[in-house]
Image (cartoon, rainbow, N blue to C red; front, side, top):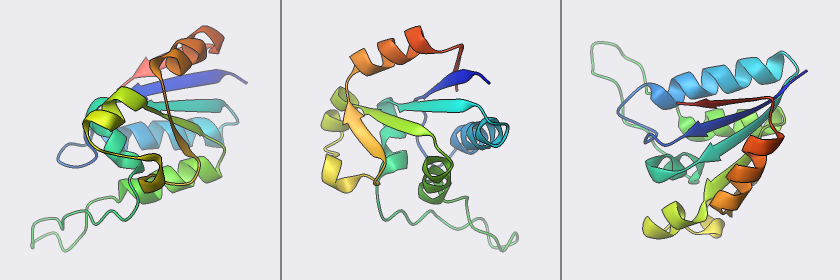
Amino acid sequence: MATVTVVVGEPPYGKERLYTTFRFVLAALHEGHSVNLFLFEDSVFVAKKGQKPPEMPALLDERMPNCEELLKAAIKEGAKVKICGVCASERSLSQSEVLEGAEITSMRDLVQWVLDSDKVISF
């Protein structure tokens, strides 16, 4: 099995990029691969506790996928999650506000993950 590092910078809501990222991460974990997930730029908010995503338009009678729940599922399945410290600081996001299993670190950790990975993908 491979080690895959996934890098994402999109915000958790408003686009489908993060939902697609989690579909990929969960599929890779399900197939037995090791997954590292590095959150930077606006994606740092994916790890914020207490998310309440907006509802879809009334006609659909559905809710947006909850990125917090998707991240919890990925962590439970074994994903390692790190958050860019500079990006978190610029957005006033502290370690106490993020989910258990997600760690605010530095770009050095991403460099090491890239060097240690079999594959790197960016969403």
